[in-house]
Image 1 (cartoon, helix red, strand yellow):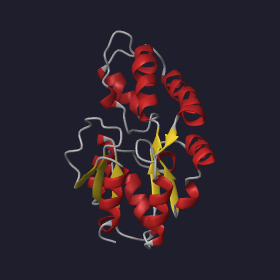
Image 2: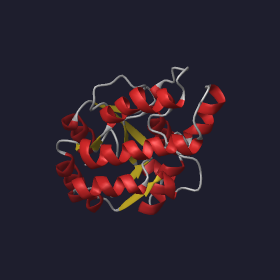
Image 3: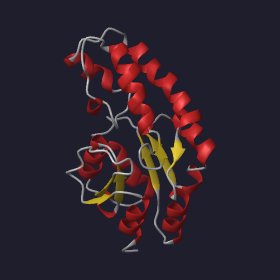
Length: 207
């Protein structure tokens, strides 16, 4: 969802860089790559093992929840051409699953603003998974299972390193999306799409 369909990443980068991470570890410079694309409820133990965190896990998570309400409710936008692309994929007979690290509270806000869930056959949040979130493959394996297909028969679109690693580990053909023009490490993916037009070409070119 984030960084592909919902353009929230710039807002999250600012919130994490200027407020969340400096509050959590004022004496350390935690890289954004340590948390981008991951379930925010899972990252605290990893950060605590490497950095000098000065707030509790509860406070850390509440910071994300506070910023998430604002970002999805007020600041984020939807990818230009997203609805048309999703409609064309469905018209071509492609089953669609939304698999995201975002909690349902954020998914629901994004759906209320952008009408996304009606475009998908299934939607899965990291909170629905008993196992670990991205970069582990569990959420993608669950998505394939709910669509009734094998992961090897699926294509995944990801903008983060953690997400791309998860999709590749699940055995999916993975498209790295650089719609925001950043330099995230996507060296593990099978295809790269730089914008909506190239993403459309990659996903619909062979359908």
